[in-house]
Length: 154
Image: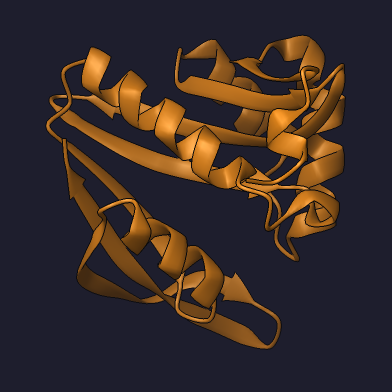
């Protein structure tokens, strides 16, 4: 187990509007085509399941999930590049899986870039299965990138 996962200051908590600057700082370090502050603000406002992983007061990563009509959709999962590979994304996804179950969703869906092999491996290790592809789903430098659609029965 990673040393950071044993740190007593590491904790998960629901994100709040006050976290928006920290969220955007991580988002901008991670993506060429980031979400806007408005998308995060709207996600918080409408009651999506929005969780952050913090070391003390420092945001290391976050996950955003919608739940409706018995289905959950992982919309965004992100860990600061400096803290990747230490189990934080797994911890966030496990929290979101539990939240989806508590909200009586029977399936959790997500999309991942075809080029993001590390994330694909993580999702498969958590019991997600590939169920389809979305052509040209993601904006990419010089064009579009396909997405792999994954699902997990809850």
